[in-house]
Length: 481
Image 1: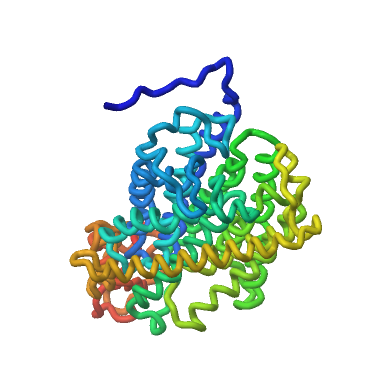
Image 2 (image 1 turned 90 degrees about the vertical axis):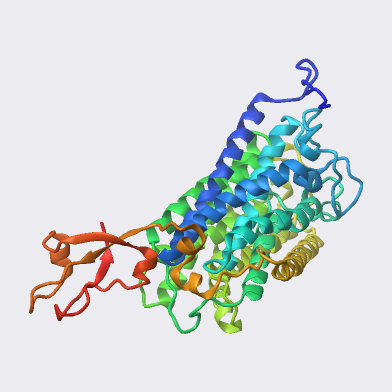
């Protein structure tokens, strides 16, 4: 028999309607980040894998939300558990969340806090899956998200944010998820790329983003959602939420600029939207653990250092030979560590006081131990995520039907068609030209060359030439409008 839901006593409750409204909006903003990750990833990948990457992000959101309802919220954020490592099942099936506000959010209903934190949990494995892009099967990926959230994300979130979590008790500062979200997903992606191995053609083919507009769209959605991600982590509508939102934006801007200018001078003095977007996300990642602890001037340093560090971290995969297809380790893993360490230097007790929170601050407040706390949290989160993710992946490969990697033919044709039977783009054949005529962009654009929209991405298989010097050759293929 299900116990009846309880109602807060309006006369005695501390529930604040403004705070509640802001956290509900913030939850919706963080939800938008899931398709944002999907579009960003799809633009970075080859066209034959675009749909499956967006789909993986959305299905990860769904699977983890169910896990969160069953036991994830209780394991990750139980405020009644005494263990320093993992929560209890007091809030299993989201029972009892309506009895009283959570200890971390005293002015909003417990169920509002639960759905807000659900968005964080649901986003994290979607980030990690980027390390396996273009070669992972969807079925084991779905099960992986459920298992990984339970034994990787939930414990690290508990360590960081639960009242009795050991990192929290030690004094580590993590405002919005530097360790449980970004370090965990980044080092999880590194384990993914090592266990699954390199993509077919890695090292011999040049893999480039296929759709820069998708990258820009995904970055825009992520940037927009990050205002809820960091600003909402104040769990109240107050000055600290405003400060967190401000430093989030500043760090993103500086990260995009620093990465862009480094790439400009390293790669032929040309700007790239991809470089700017990667840098902006690096800045957003780095400011995440610090957003409720640092002043705006410090956000400039976070963005600058993150843009530089993450840019050069991309070179690691070439130097060490692992195939992190979408640079998740470089941006989220390295960016998360950079943000955690800089928090130990620039955290300010004055910023915490914006909502009455007392912290000792970092080096700028002469609290020298804080950097050590941040380093301990970073190493623990990274080590746990990397090792446990690797164990999960190796275990999956021994279970019949749950092998992770797609077969070679499917990888060559693309995961869109091999795993879903769908494709993101229609292509067109070009009819043969009379002898002696040359096919050019101009006669394609003015419509003098007839098109037959018949081919899918998989059938094109990467051929997109639009020049026929000899009309007797097989007709070329070009994307249709």
